[in-house]
Amino acid sequence: MATNLEFIKSETVNQVISFSMTDCFSDKYENYFVTIQGLDHNNLTRHITALRFINSSGVVTSANYDLAKLGMMSNNTFSDDYATAQTSINEISADGYGKGSGSSFYVYNPYSSSNYTFVNYQVSAFYDIHGSTRGVKGIGVLNIAETHTGFNIFDYGGFNMYNGKISVFGVK
Amino acid sequence: MSGSLVKLDEQIVSTPVSSVNLTGMTSDYDVYVVQGNNISLDTDADLLCIRTLIDGTQQTASSYDKAGMLLKANTTFQDIHGTNADFWYLDMILGTATQEIGNFTTYCFNFGNSSEYSFITMESTFRNTHSVLQGIAGGGIYKVAEAHNGIKYYAYTGNIDTNSRFVLYGLKK
Image (tube, rainbow over all chains, first blue to last red; front, side, top):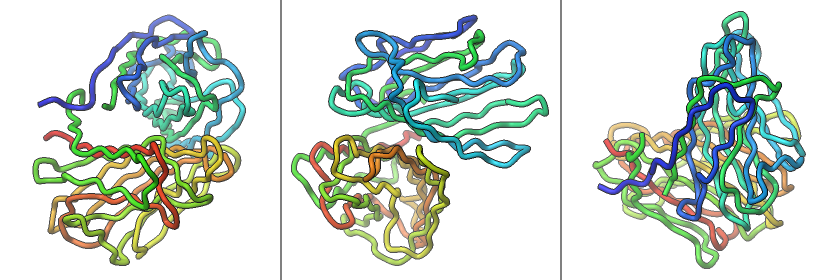
């Protein structure tokens, strides 16, 4: 039976500060499902990873991203984090002490030249020296109506990322 | 989970309509996914509402509960909750300005089970009637033990606008 969640591509992320998942969005799908698993920072303390989109000129770094995310700590109160006019959507993934992480997100309308690109994301991370779990439920938008052919993730503090695997699926 | 999602119905609004019905829920699936993208409404500050369907008939009992968190890009978040309403809604208060559009993914559980309540999880991301990024993370229950074979999306006061897209998928067992 033909089904409608279609694997597009998978890539590994290792020993790089920034990684671009290129040519994964097309006119074949309107929405996408992305997983990031295993990403860590090789025994460094807590780190977060941010998301940007890629247009025909490269990675979009202008201050046109808005985001809101609920940070849920297993050993602390939850936090409302929100911002507008940012240069990325931060905490698309997070990790600490080389213990890995898992995150997923839906991307809506990335290839449409007439719509903004939106995301819903969720993260589960081992995050803190005290061994706490951090969960994140977040939303984001790139407030530019243009075609995006892929996305970029990068370490928010400029450190190398290790052991990650990114998979992209089209929701047909 | 690659290859586990089967499209059952798709509606792309070609002219403004008050509602969209997605049908095709059968005993072949236990869990369904509804995805909406590029959702727009033709009336400012209008809501996208949801009801269950039985053979095309919307269920209007005051038995819809929901709870969740409304995330906002410009201020602290809001607990959203309610009981005994006669519809669910995704807290997408959309406007008519440019790019005040919504996107969502809803999982539907137990819709085919006549002996249990029907449940949904809801997540959305949208620019609201003030062009502010918002999104809901939460869930809802329809507190009637009956089988439903469809789901209805409708605008509370006006119409769902052109190019809004709704797709119903079954999760293959």
